[in-house]
Length: 556
Image (cartoon, rainbow, N blue to C red):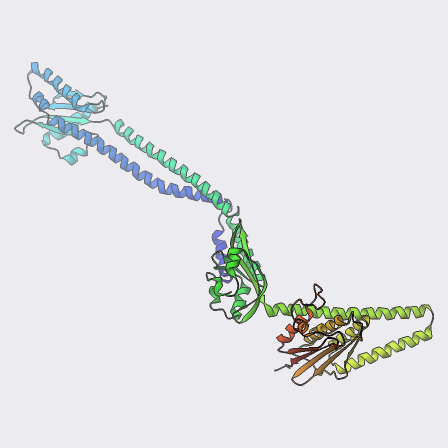
């Protein structure tokens, strides 16, 4: 409901008020890029660390594996048990050949020492830098221990150390295997570069996805920025709440989505339960007699229909909302029927006043023309006689009407109708029985002018083209508990069928378009005042309209 949205629209505007240096598309791209970077960077660092550990483990395992193979090899054992100067060279060549068969690569280096720590074989096809002195350091360090654990051996960077023992378990030599630092670094760098390529691709995919998503969002939002949407939301709420008609929006499922302030008030007055939570409810629960299915699904339009909602009769207009060749929902606008009728009554009353004023002006101008003509002819005696006659007649009319009707507004209105009747050559008069005392509260003078004016104009219309006697009499009687208004004419009269239709909206016995509203509005005003109206007529016998209005005085 807009009442709720009013309370939240300020916070909505604050939340949507981003840095205006960047457009919505730029903000989305920056945000998603940051999210991707934040997500990928720790993962990349962790993966890089794990890869380096895997490379280190693999190199260490390879070194230890080659070392174990050589230490347990019979060829190496036999070669290390040869000490003769003549045979030692041949034994070394055989051991070197065996090492080459075991290594099968140019990456690992192998150094074999005898029990006296003398170098017997140096296998270094990859030309590992400083491999010989590093191997000697390991021999000097671990040979005296006569044993090395696998964890300690595994922890030696890029190298492995092993003891060669004979069948009796005696140490007869030592084997050192190793890999260069460049190999480890190169393997790690290759893995890191591969990860960086993946991260870069992921970042590019994220950026392009962000750009595509931003474009889609901008299209859905019709190109508006968040600040503009917030401003439009505020403007919409203010406009809807400023309208003095109830406005309700219904989506394609028949669920209420928007309720303006006036609609909330009107439905509360009508006794609709839980009006503070109208949004989200089915519109059929509120407007039970409105054909919502035909409006939403069939595109039907309902205009100015009288519909009772709760305890109040409303004038309702319901139109479908059509967008992109499909119905999105419906908009229902409504006002109290009594308010609409009151406005129509006011307009009709103004029309009666204006008609009376125009008639008086017309009559005055006619008399002025006669006076000017007599002056031009210098017929001063006739002028004096004519002006005295006008003054006496006017004074007599005014005195009679003002004496009978104490209200000056009503008296002026009747004098205007007398002038109007003279224009139409109709004999119109206020009867001698008429009498109105004191100040009115309900009905007001305006109510009487509205009702009597419409009845008098209806009588004038009946006599305009009538060839017989053209007389209209008005009687206004003020009793203690009611006011009686009687308008009778000597016109052509009506049959039973016509009398049954004269109070219908838009009905005219003459069939003239734009007529037929006077009696309808008069009856509506009478009913609003809890009064009654009756008509007596017969063809050729004129018509008599009698109105009875209960009187409410100040304090009742």
